[in-house]
Image 1: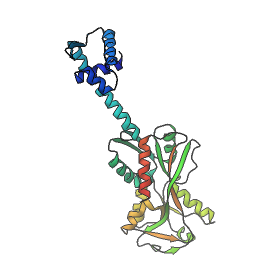
Image 2 (image 1 turned 135 degrees about the vertical axis):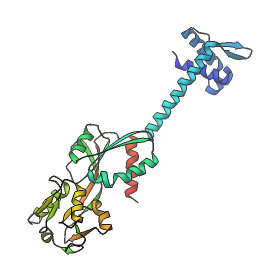
Image 3 (image 1 turned 30 degrees about the horizontal axis):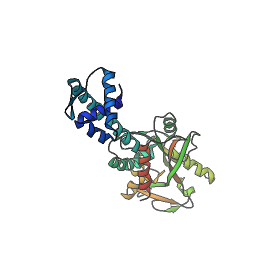
Image 4 (image 1 turned 30 degrees about the vertical axis):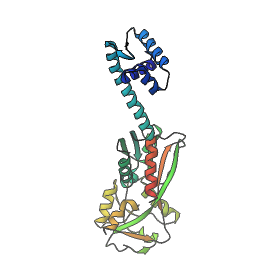
Length: 296
């Protein structure tokens, strides 16, 4: 069926007059009449019956007009959806992140984003950096937020968003609480370590090697950030963490920072995308929120 001719017929049926329909469509009246005649020939039905200077819909014409209205209403919905999808106001955004950005940064960013784009579905997966990169490469996510300094896959484009300070923290009544001491002094204390392979643990080991200092004693090894922090809050040992992870505990007075002379380490947070791949608009819109949030 010729949809162009069907659209002309529908417009005539809606206006009740060929002349008004032609004016609305900005084409000549004979052109409208000719197209409708071709449509009648194509489908083998009479759609319009002359009535004085106007037209009258046949029985078949009335039924076809109703169906055409549904069709062109659906077409408009589709066009509107495409426009909304292009500008990022609808759709789905899949994000993958490591623990630090997933727990301490993305909730704020996503909350701001959803206020502006409530109809976009967000799927956030928290995993380790290796798995995050795999999901990105395999198109299981559009963007990734990864904490820690990494050598990224050649298929990945990375941009450092900002750097968070790494801190030595202890119980508020610890002898080194709020003191300025040396790295050699702090590593003599028992440490509460995260699991092997964690960024903080790797950073501390590297720091000791660079300064020719013996690595700290592993007083406890705990596979979990909250458990690590709670152990120190209860009065045992020292831990080395990103400031985002312990800021609220320091503010509440449950933990205390230890200042280490001449030592300043940072934990970078990177945005990762597929190299040479075009980001969908919802991802662009989220990144605008992130940039605006970090600049305020």
